[in-house]
Image 1 (cartoon, helix red, strand yellow):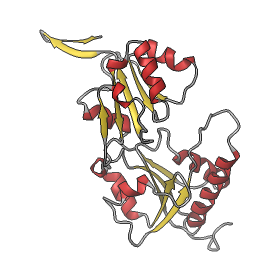
Image 2 (spheres, one colour):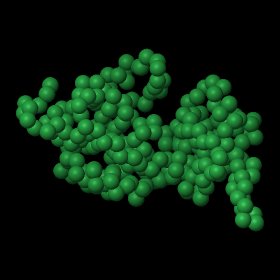
Image 3 (cartoon, helix red, strand yellow):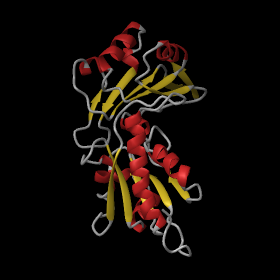
Image 4 (cartoon, helix red, strand yellow):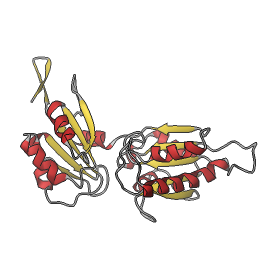
Length: 262
C-alpha cells in the first residue's frame, strides 16, 4: 500500500557492503550512510538469529535510536535460471514488504551486508523483490571490501598479477566445472567451502594444487583461523565464512624483471 501522503518523498534504499569482518575495513561512505539512515534492515540466516552484518556495522555506527528490521534469508542454494525454492521466495517477499512499508513512509532504509553487496549477497534478492512492486525506488549500492581481498592481504599475497586469469567460484559446484576451472585458470577463489572442505582437499591433492591453496576461516572476525596447509582443516567443522584462495604462480623479481613461477 502506498503512503497516505502522496506528496512526501519516497524513501531511498541503500545496499551497503560492510566488509569481511574487521569494522576498520568499512569504508567512509558505508559509515556515513549507515549513520544517516534511521532504519536498518539486517539479514539473518534464521528467525531471531544474529546478524553478522549488524554486529560489524554497530561497532562503527551505534544502532541505538534506529529502527532495526531483522530479515530472515534462509541459507539455501539458489540456481539462477531454475525455479526458486518456495521457502526462499516467501522469505524474500516478507522481507521486501517490511522494507517497502518504511520506504512508503519516506524513510531511507540501509541494508548492511557482509563483504561487497554485489558479490553473492542477499541484497540483490531483496532488491529484486522490492523493484517488482516499487520499480521507482531510488537505490544506491555501496561497495565493500571482499573476503577474498582480505584473505589475500592477510597473507601479503596478490589475488592476480600480470596476465593472470582469476575465477571466483561457489564451492558448491558438484560437477566437472570446478575441476576444469582449477586445471585451466591461474588463480581461483572458492567461496563457502565449509561443507565441502574434505572433498576439496582430495581434489586439490589429486591435481597437485594442495600446496598452492590457503584457507581462511572467519576472516577479520574473532576466532579467525588461517590454514596455510589446507590438509590441517580435514574433518573440521568450519564456519560458514570460510574462503579458499588457490594461486598456481608465485611472483619473482630478478635483475629488474618480474616473472611468475609455478
